[in-house]
Length: 478
Image (tube, rainbow, N blue to C red; front, top):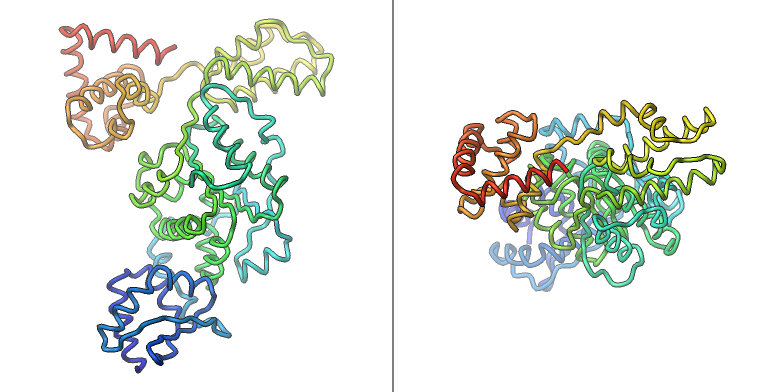
Protein backbone atom coordinates (compact mmCIF):
# COMPACT_ATOMS: atom_id res chain seq x y z
CA UNK A 1 0.00 0.00 0.00
CA UNK A 2 1.42 3.36 -1.02
CA UNK A 3 1.43 6.58 0.96
CA UNK A 4 -0.86 8.04 -1.71
CA UNK A 5 -3.47 5.49 -0.67
CA UNK A 6 -2.95 6.48 2.97
CA UNK A 7 -3.51 10.06 1.84
CA UNK A 8 -6.96 9.09 0.49
CA UNK A 9 -7.75 7.28 3.75
CA UNK A 10 -6.75 10.42 5.64
CA UNK A 11 -9.20 12.49 3.60
CA UNK A 12 -11.98 10.05 4.46
CA UNK A 13 -11.03 10.17 8.13
CA UNK A 14 -11.02 13.98 8.12
CA UNK A 15 -14.65 13.95 6.98
CA UNK A 16 -15.58 11.22 9.45
CA UNK A 17 -13.98 12.51 12.67
CA UNK A 18 -13.92 16.27 12.08
CA UNK A 19 -11.06 18.75 11.79
CA UNK A 20 -10.20 19.08 15.50
CA UNK A 21 -10.00 15.34 16.08
CA UNK A 22 -8.09 14.83 12.85
CA UNK A 23 -5.48 17.50 13.58
CA UNK A 24 -5.09 16.40 17.19
CA UNK A 25 -4.96 12.61 16.76
CA UNK A 26 -4.68 11.43 13.13
CA UNK A 27 -2.27 13.96 11.64
CA UNK A 28 0.57 13.30 14.13
CA UNK A 29 0.67 9.62 13.06
CA UNK A 30 3.25 8.58 10.45
CA UNK A 31 2.15 5.73 8.18
CA UNK A 32 4.73 2.90 8.12
CA UNK A 33 3.07 0.45 5.77
CA UNK A 34 0.75 -2.61 5.73
CA UNK A 35 2.03 -6.15 5.98
CA UNK A 36 0.07 -9.40 6.49
CA UNK A 37 -3.11 -7.44 7.27
CA UNK A 38 -1.39 -5.28 9.91
CA UNK A 39 -1.24 -1.50 9.42
CA UNK A 40 1.71 0.03 11.25
CA UNK A 41 2.12 3.63 12.40
CA UNK A 42 4.75 5.68 14.18
CA UNK A 43 3.31 7.99 16.86
CA UNK A 44 4.90 10.67 19.08
CA UNK A 45 3.79 9.00 22.35
CA UNK A 46 2.21 5.81 23.64
CA UNK A 47 -0.70 7.88 24.89
CA UNK A 48 -1.61 8.97 21.34
CA UNK A 49 -1.35 5.41 20.05
CA UNK A 50 -3.61 4.08 22.80
CA UNK A 51 -6.12 6.90 22.32
CA UNK A 52 -6.34 6.43 18.54
CA UNK A 53 -6.63 2.65 18.90
CA UNK A 54 -9.45 2.96 21.43
CA UNK A 55 -11.42 5.77 19.78
CA UNK A 56 -10.71 5.59 16.03
CA UNK A 57 -9.32 2.09 15.42
CA UNK A 58 -12.47 0.65 13.84
CA UNK A 59 -12.94 3.69 11.61
CA UNK A 60 -9.37 3.47 10.36
CA UNK A 61 -9.85 -0.21 9.50
CA UNK A 62 -13.12 0.60 7.73
CA UNK A 63 -11.57 3.27 5.54
CA UNK A 64 -8.63 1.01 4.72
CA UNK A 65 -11.13 -1.55 3.44
CA UNK A 66 -12.89 1.10 1.35
CA UNK A 67 -9.52 1.97 -0.19
CA UNK A 68 -9.07 -1.68 -1.25
CA UNK A 69 -6.62 -2.65 1.49
CA UNK A 70 -8.32 -4.85 4.14
CA UNK A 71 -6.68 -4.44 7.54
CA UNK A 72 -7.21 -6.85 10.42
CA UNK A 73 -5.16 -5.04 13.04
CA UNK A 74 -3.44 -1.72 13.72
CA UNK A 75 -0.13 -1.44 15.53
CA UNK A 76 1.61 1.64 16.88
CA UNK A 77 5.27 2.27 17.69
CA UNK A 78 6.69 5.37 19.34
CA UNK A 79 8.81 7.33 16.89
CA UNK A 80 12.35 8.21 17.90
CA UNK A 81 11.56 11.86 17.30
CA UNK A 82 8.27 13.74 17.27
CA UNK A 83 7.01 14.48 13.74
CA UNK A 84 7.24 18.22 13.16
CA UNK A 85 3.72 18.40 11.73
CA UNK A 86 2.23 17.64 15.14
CA UNK A 87 3.56 20.92 16.49
CA UNK A 88 0.94 23.00 14.68
CA UNK A 89 -2.08 21.22 16.12
CA UNK A 90 -4.83 23.71 16.86
CA UNK A 91 -2.95 26.80 15.66
CA UNK A 92 -5.84 27.92 13.47
CA UNK A 93 -8.16 27.86 16.49
CA UNK A 94 -5.94 30.32 18.34
CA UNK A 95 -5.75 32.67 15.39
CA UNK A 96 -9.53 32.67 15.07
CA UNK A 97 -10.32 33.03 18.78
CA UNK A 98 -9.62 36.51 20.16
CA UNK A 99 -10.61 35.48 23.70
CA UNK A 100 -7.72 33.02 23.74
CA UNK A 101 -5.30 35.63 22.44
CA UNK A 102 -6.33 37.95 25.26
CA UNK A 103 -6.06 35.30 27.93
CA UNK A 104 -2.66 34.15 26.81
CA UNK A 105 -1.29 37.66 27.09
CA UNK A 106 -2.42 38.01 30.70
CA UNK A 107 -0.05 37.35 33.60
CA UNK A 108 -0.97 34.35 35.72
CA UNK A 109 -3.21 35.88 38.39
CA UNK A 110 -4.98 33.90 41.08
CA UNK A 111 -4.51 30.75 39.02
CA UNK A 112 -4.20 28.21 41.80
CA UNK A 113 -2.17 25.40 40.28
CA UNK A 114 -0.93 22.56 42.40
CA UNK A 115 0.67 19.31 41.26
CA UNK A 116 1.18 17.04 44.26
CA UNK A 117 2.91 13.72 44.65
CA UNK A 118 5.84 14.65 42.36
CA UNK A 119 9.04 16.59 42.74
CA UNK A 120 9.66 19.73 40.71
CA UNK A 121 12.12 17.83 38.55
CA UNK A 122 9.63 15.10 37.71
CA UNK A 123 6.96 17.70 36.96
CA UNK A 124 9.25 19.37 34.46
CA UNK A 125 10.09 16.05 32.89
CA UNK A 126 6.43 15.11 32.56
CA UNK A 127 5.38 18.47 31.28
CA UNK A 128 7.95 18.94 28.56
CA UNK A 129 8.95 22.15 26.86
CA UNK A 130 6.79 25.08 27.82
CA UNK A 131 4.24 23.05 29.79
CA UNK A 132 4.84 23.12 33.50
CA UNK A 133 2.41 23.11 36.37
CA UNK A 134 4.30 24.60 39.31
CA UNK A 135 3.10 23.51 42.72
CA UNK A 136 1.45 26.61 44.14
CA UNK A 137 0.59 26.45 47.86
CA UNK A 138 -3.03 26.01 48.81
CA UNK A 139 -4.64 28.23 51.41
CA UNK A 140 -3.82 26.64 54.77
CA UNK A 141 -7.03 27.98 56.26
CA UNK A 142 -9.21 26.01 53.87
CA UNK A 143 -9.37 22.53 55.39
CA UNK A 144 -12.23 20.25 56.36
CA UNK A 145 -11.61 21.03 60.02
CA UNK A 146 -12.23 24.74 59.44
CA UNK A 147 -15.33 24.23 57.29
CA UNK A 148 -18.51 24.94 59.26
CA UNK A 149 -21.26 22.54 58.24
CA UNK A 150 -24.93 23.51 58.17
CA UNK A 151 -28.08 22.49 56.34
CA UNK A 152 -27.31 24.59 53.19
CA UNK A 153 -23.93 22.91 52.62
CA UNK A 154 -24.08 19.51 54.37
CA UNK A 155 -24.51 17.49 51.15
CA UNK A 156 -21.63 19.30 49.43
CA UNK A 157 -19.42 18.75 52.48
CA UNK A 158 -20.30 15.04 52.68
CA UNK A 159 -19.64 14.53 48.96
CA UNK A 160 -16.31 16.36 49.16
CA UNK A 161 -15.31 14.24 52.16
CA UNK A 162 -16.17 11.04 50.30
CA UNK A 163 -14.02 12.02 47.32
CA UNK A 164 -11.11 13.13 49.52
CA UNK A 165 -11.12 9.89 51.50
CA UNK A 166 -10.54 7.92 48.31
CA UNK A 167 -11.62 4.40 47.55
CA UNK A 168 -13.71 3.39 44.53
CA UNK A 169 -14.99 6.32 42.50
CA UNK A 170 -18.70 6.33 43.22
CA UNK A 171 -19.63 9.52 41.36
CA UNK A 172 -17.56 11.15 38.67
CA UNK A 173 -17.36 14.05 38.27
CA UNK A 174 -18.26 15.78 41.51
CA UNK A 175 -19.70 19.15 40.44
CA UNK A 176 -20.03 21.84 43.14
CA UNK A 177 -21.86 25.04 42.33
CA UNK A 178 -23.19 28.11 44.09
CA UNK A 179 -22.81 31.84 44.44
CA UNK A 180 -19.83 33.84 45.65
CA UNK A 181 -18.67 33.20 49.20
CA UNK A 182 -20.66 30.01 49.84
CA UNK A 183 -17.68 27.66 50.27
CA UNK A 184 -16.93 26.10 46.86
CA UNK A 185 -13.26 27.06 46.86
CA UNK A 186 -12.91 26.12 50.53
CA UNK A 187 -14.13 22.60 49.77
CA UNK A 188 -11.90 22.32 46.70
CA UNK A 189 -8.84 23.30 48.74
CA UNK A 190 -9.91 20.96 51.54
CA UNK A 191 -10.08 18.00 49.14
CA UNK A 192 -6.64 18.82 47.73
CA UNK A 193 -5.12 19.21 51.23
CA UNK A 194 -6.59 15.91 52.40
CA UNK A 195 -5.36 14.02 49.34
CA UNK A 196 -1.93 15.60 49.61
CA UNK A 197 -1.68 14.61 53.27
CA UNK A 198 -3.13 11.10 53.17
CA UNK A 199 -2.20 9.94 49.66
CA UNK A 200 0.96 11.82 48.61
CA UNK A 201 1.67 9.30 45.86
CA UNK A 202 -1.29 10.57 43.81
CA UNK A 203 -0.80 13.12 41.06
CA UNK A 204 -3.38 15.76 41.95
CA UNK A 205 -3.73 18.85 39.76
CA UNK A 206 -5.83 21.77 41.00
CA UNK A 207 -6.23 24.89 38.87
CA UNK A 208 -8.73 27.45 37.70
CA UNK A 209 -10.46 27.09 34.34
CA UNK A 210 -8.71 30.29 33.29
CA UNK A 211 -5.36 28.70 34.08
CA UNK A 212 -6.32 25.59 32.10
CA UNK A 213 -7.05 27.81 29.11
CA UNK A 214 -3.86 29.80 29.58
CA UNK A 215 -1.76 26.63 29.67
CA UNK A 216 -3.54 25.25 26.61
CA UNK A 217 -2.90 28.39 24.57
CA UNK A 218 0.70 28.47 25.76
CA UNK A 219 1.12 24.88 24.58
CA UNK A 220 -0.24 25.71 21.13
CA UNK A 221 2.05 28.70 20.77
CA UNK A 222 5.13 26.82 21.93
CA UNK A 223 4.39 23.79 19.74
CA UNK A 224 3.99 21.47 22.71
CA UNK A 225 0.32 20.53 22.53
CA UNK A 226 1.04 16.81 22.72
CA UNK A 227 2.97 17.20 25.98
CA UNK A 228 0.03 19.22 27.33
CA UNK A 229 -2.42 16.46 26.43
CA UNK A 230 -0.25 13.71 27.81
CA UNK A 231 0.35 15.53 31.09
CA UNK A 232 -3.25 16.50 31.83
CA UNK A 233 -4.58 13.10 30.84
CA UNK A 234 -2.15 11.19 33.03
CA UNK A 235 -3.13 12.70 36.40
CA UNK A 236 -4.95 10.77 39.12
CA UNK A 237 -7.22 13.61 40.25
CA UNK A 238 -8.10 16.71 38.23
CA UNK A 239 -9.70 19.68 40.01
CA UNK A 240 -10.93 22.67 37.99
CA UNK A 241 -12.34 25.79 39.67
CA UNK A 242 -14.81 28.22 38.03
CA UNK A 243 -15.40 26.10 34.92
CA UNK A 244 -17.94 28.66 33.63
CA UNK A 245 -14.91 30.66 32.44
CA UNK A 246 -14.33 28.39 29.42
CA UNK A 247 -17.92 28.81 28.13
CA UNK A 248 -17.88 30.32 24.63
CA UNK A 249 -14.21 29.52 24.05
CA UNK A 250 -14.49 26.77 21.47
CA UNK A 251 -10.91 25.49 21.32
CA UNK A 252 -10.55 25.28 25.08
CA UNK A 253 -13.93 23.56 25.42
CA UNK A 254 -12.84 20.99 22.83
CA UNK A 255 -9.63 20.23 24.71
CA UNK A 256 -11.40 20.15 28.08
CA UNK A 257 -13.99 17.71 26.69
CA UNK A 258 -11.33 15.28 25.45
CA UNK A 259 -9.34 15.58 28.69
CA UNK A 260 -12.53 14.90 30.67
CA UNK A 261 -13.39 11.81 28.62
CA UNK A 262 -9.86 10.42 28.80
CA UNK A 263 -9.76 10.66 32.60
CA UNK A 264 -13.27 9.24 33.09
CA UNK A 265 -12.39 6.32 30.81
CA UNK A 266 -9.41 5.63 33.08
CA UNK A 267 -11.64 5.86 36.18
CA UNK A 268 -9.75 8.92 37.43
CA UNK A 269 -11.55 11.37 39.73
CA UNK A 270 -12.64 14.79 38.44
CA UNK A 271 -13.89 17.59 40.69
CA UNK A 272 -15.38 20.73 39.16
CA UNK A 273 -16.76 23.97 40.61
CA UNK A 274 -18.82 26.73 39.01
CA UNK A 275 -21.12 29.58 39.93
CA UNK A 276 -24.18 27.81 38.51
CA UNK A 277 -25.42 24.40 37.37
CA UNK A 278 -24.02 22.99 34.09
CA UNK A 279 -27.27 23.51 32.13
CA UNK A 280 -27.41 27.14 33.28
CA UNK A 281 -23.94 28.10 32.00
CA UNK A 282 -24.52 30.05 28.81
CA UNK A 283 -22.39 29.14 25.77
CA UNK A 284 -21.21 25.92 27.39
CA UNK A 285 -21.38 23.14 24.79
CA UNK A 286 -24.27 20.72 25.32
CA UNK A 287 -21.98 17.69 25.27
CA UNK A 288 -19.85 19.19 28.06
CA UNK A 289 -22.90 20.16 30.13
CA UNK A 290 -24.21 16.62 29.69
CA UNK A 291 -20.90 15.12 30.77
CA UNK A 292 -20.67 17.38 33.81
CA UNK A 293 -24.14 16.25 34.90
CA UNK A 294 -23.27 12.56 34.59
CA UNK A 295 -21.87 12.42 38.12
CA UNK A 296 -23.07 14.14 41.29
CA UNK A 297 -24.15 17.79 40.95
CA UNK A 298 -24.40 19.54 44.33
CA UNK A 299 -25.73 23.03 45.00
CA UNK A 300 -24.27 25.03 47.88
CA UNK A 301 -27.33 27.00 48.94
CA UNK A 302 -27.17 30.52 50.37
CA UNK A 303 -26.35 30.39 54.06
CA UNK A 304 -29.15 30.45 56.61
CA UNK A 305 -29.05 32.29 59.93
CA UNK A 306 -27.92 29.26 61.94
CA UNK A 307 -25.01 28.52 59.61
CA UNK A 308 -23.85 32.15 59.57
CA UNK A 309 -23.96 32.24 63.37
CA UNK A 310 -21.97 28.99 63.52
CA UNK A 311 -19.31 30.45 61.21
CA UNK A 312 -19.01 33.55 63.39
CA UNK A 313 -18.70 31.50 66.58
CA UNK A 314 -15.99 29.38 64.96
CA UNK A 315 -14.08 32.51 63.92
CA UNK A 316 -14.38 33.98 67.44
CA UNK A 317 -12.84 30.82 68.90
CA UNK A 318 -9.92 31.20 66.49
CA UNK A 319 -9.45 34.91 67.28
CA UNK A 320 -9.41 34.27 71.03
CA UNK A 321 -6.29 32.17 70.60
CA UNK A 322 -4.50 35.34 69.46
CA UNK A 323 -6.46 37.85 71.58
CA UNK A 324 -7.38 36.02 74.81
CA UNK A 325 -8.45 39.22 76.57
CA UNK A 326 -10.89 40.32 73.89
CA UNK A 327 -14.47 40.74 75.11
CA UNK A 328 -17.59 40.60 72.97
CA UNK A 329 -21.06 41.49 74.23
CA UNK A 330 -23.93 39.03 74.01
CA UNK A 331 -26.06 39.62 70.93
CA UNK A 332 -23.30 41.01 68.67
CA UNK A 333 -22.77 37.77 66.74
CA UNK A 334 -26.52 37.27 66.38
CA UNK A 335 -26.82 40.83 65.04
CA UNK A 336 -24.11 40.25 62.43
CA UNK A 337 -25.55 36.87 61.37
CA UNK A 338 -28.90 38.55 60.77
CA UNK A 339 -27.68 41.68 58.99
CA UNK A 340 -24.93 40.28 56.72
CA UNK A 341 -26.66 37.47 54.89
CA UNK A 342 -25.45 37.39 51.29
CA UNK A 343 -21.75 36.52 51.45
CA UNK A 344 -19.68 34.60 53.98
CA UNK A 345 -16.50 36.39 52.90
CA UNK A 346 -18.08 39.74 53.73
CA UNK A 347 -19.29 38.32 57.04
CA UNK A 348 -15.83 37.07 58.01
CA UNK A 349 -14.23 40.32 56.82
CA UNK A 350 -16.62 42.33 58.98
CA UNK A 351 -15.70 40.27 62.04
CA UNK A 352 -11.97 40.69 61.31
CA UNK A 353 -12.40 44.46 61.10
CA UNK A 354 -14.43 44.49 64.31
CA UNK A 355 -11.87 42.46 66.26
CA UNK A 356 -8.99 44.55 64.94
CA UNK A 357 -10.76 47.72 66.09
CA UNK A 358 -11.61 46.23 69.49
CA UNK A 359 -8.03 45.08 70.12
CA UNK A 360 -6.54 48.42 69.07
CA UNK A 361 -8.76 50.58 71.28
CA UNK A 362 -8.89 48.04 74.10
CA UNK A 363 -12.67 48.14 74.49
CA UNK A 364 -15.37 45.54 74.77
CA UNK A 365 -17.12 44.92 71.45
CA UNK A 366 -20.66 46.13 72.09
CA UNK A 367 -23.62 46.39 69.76
CA UNK A 368 -23.18 50.17 69.57
CA UNK A 369 -19.48 49.86 68.72
CA UNK A 370 -20.35 47.24 66.08
CA UNK A 371 -22.87 49.53 64.37
CA UNK A 372 -20.41 52.44 64.35
CA UNK A 373 -17.39 50.43 63.22
CA UNK A 374 -19.25 48.52 60.48
CA UNK A 375 -21.61 51.25 59.28
CA UNK A 376 -20.34 51.05 55.68
CA UNK A 377 -20.43 47.24 55.60
CA UNK A 378 -23.94 47.13 57.05
CA UNK A 379 -25.24 49.64 54.51
CA UNK A 380 -23.71 47.67 51.64
CA UNK A 381 -25.13 44.41 53.00
CA UNK A 382 -28.73 45.55 53.23
CA UNK A 383 -30.92 42.86 51.74
CA UNK A 384 -30.91 42.94 47.93
CA UNK A 385 -33.05 40.40 46.11
CA UNK A 386 -31.56 39.05 42.86
CA UNK A 387 -33.28 37.71 39.75
CA UNK A 388 -31.46 34.40 40.20
CA UNK A 389 -32.74 34.06 43.76
CA UNK A 390 -36.29 34.77 42.59
CA UNK A 391 -35.98 32.09 39.91
CA UNK A 392 -34.71 29.59 42.48
CA UNK A 393 -37.44 30.30 45.04
CA UNK A 394 -40.26 30.19 42.49
CA UNK A 395 -38.91 26.93 41.02
CA UNK A 396 -38.76 25.37 44.49
CA UNK A 397 -42.25 26.63 45.35
CA UNK A 398 -43.80 25.08 42.24
CA UNK A 399 -41.60 21.96 42.32
CA UNK A 400 -40.13 22.56 38.88
CA UNK A 401 -36.61 22.44 37.53
CA UNK A 402 -34.67 25.68 37.44
CA UNK A 403 -33.58 24.87 33.88
CA UNK A 404 -37.25 24.91 32.79
CA UNK A 405 -37.62 28.38 34.28
CA UNK A 406 -35.17 29.79 31.73
CA UNK A 407 -35.77 27.19 29.02
CA UNK A 408 -38.01 27.22 25.94
CA UNK A 409 -40.92 25.10 27.24
CA UNK A 410 -44.30 26.89 27.12
CA UNK A 411 -46.59 24.44 28.89
CA UNK A 412 -48.86 26.22 31.35
CA UNK A 413 -47.37 24.43 34.38
CA UNK A 414 -44.06 26.05 33.46
CA UNK A 415 -45.14 29.27 31.75
CA UNK A 416 -47.25 30.54 34.66
CA UNK A 417 -44.51 30.20 37.33
CA UNK A 418 -42.11 31.80 34.84
CA UNK A 419 -44.47 34.78 34.50
CA UNK A 420 -44.72 35.05 38.28
CA UNK A 421 -40.94 35.04 38.57
CA UNK A 422 -40.72 37.80 35.95
CA UNK A 423 -43.34 39.79 37.85
CA UNK A 424 -41.43 39.45 41.12
CA UNK A 425 -38.17 40.36 39.39
CA UNK A 426 -39.76 43.57 38.13
CA UNK A 427 -41.23 44.42 41.56
CA UNK A 428 -38.35 43.40 43.85
CA UNK A 429 -35.22 44.29 41.86
CA UNK A 430 -33.91 47.35 40.09
CA UNK A 431 -33.22 45.41 36.88
CA UNK A 432 -34.60 46.78 33.62
CA UNK A 433 -37.04 44.80 31.49
CA UNK A 434 -34.35 43.86 28.92
CA UNK A 435 -32.03 42.73 31.73
CA UNK A 436 -34.76 40.58 33.25
CA UNK A 437 -35.58 39.07 29.86
CA UNK A 438 -31.92 38.23 29.31
CA UNK A 439 -31.85 36.28 32.59
CA UNK A 440 -34.87 34.26 31.50
CA UNK A 441 -33.16 32.54 28.60
CA UNK A 442 -32.60 35.65 26.50
CA UNK A 443 -36.26 36.58 26.13
CA UNK A 444 -37.36 39.93 24.71
CA UNK A 445 -38.40 42.76 27.05
CA UNK A 446 -41.92 42.66 25.59
CA UNK A 447 -42.28 39.12 26.97
CA UNK A 448 -41.51 40.45 30.44
CA UNK A 449 -44.00 43.31 29.98
CA UNK A 450 -46.70 40.83 29.01
CA UNK A 451 -45.90 38.62 32.03
CA UNK A 452 -46.10 41.55 34.47
CA UNK A 453 -49.42 42.71 32.99
CA UNK A 454 -50.86 39.19 33.02
CA UNK A 455 -49.93 38.50 36.67
CA UNK A 456 -51.33 41.91 37.69
CA UNK A 457 -54.64 40.88 36.12
CA UNK A 458 -54.67 37.38 37.60
CA UNK A 459 -53.82 38.31 41.18
CA UNK A 460 -56.91 40.55 41.27
CA UNK A 461 -59.25 37.64 40.48
CA UNK A 462 -57.32 34.53 41.57
CA UNK A 463 -56.85 34.24 45.33
CA UNK A 464 -54.38 31.37 45.00
CA UNK A 465 -52.03 33.40 42.81
CA UNK A 466 -52.33 36.39 45.14
CA UNK A 467 -51.45 34.19 48.14
CA UNK A 468 -48.52 32.57 46.33
CA UNK A 469 -47.12 35.98 45.38
CA UNK A 470 -47.37 37.27 48.94
CA UNK A 471 -45.71 34.13 50.35
CA UNK A 472 -42.88 34.29 47.82
CA UNK A 473 -42.37 38.02 48.45
CA UNK A 474 -42.07 37.42 52.19
CA UNK A 475 -39.57 34.58 51.73
CA UNK A 476 -37.46 36.67 49.36
CA UNK A 477 -37.45 39.76 51.58
CA UNK A 478 -36.89 37.85 54.84
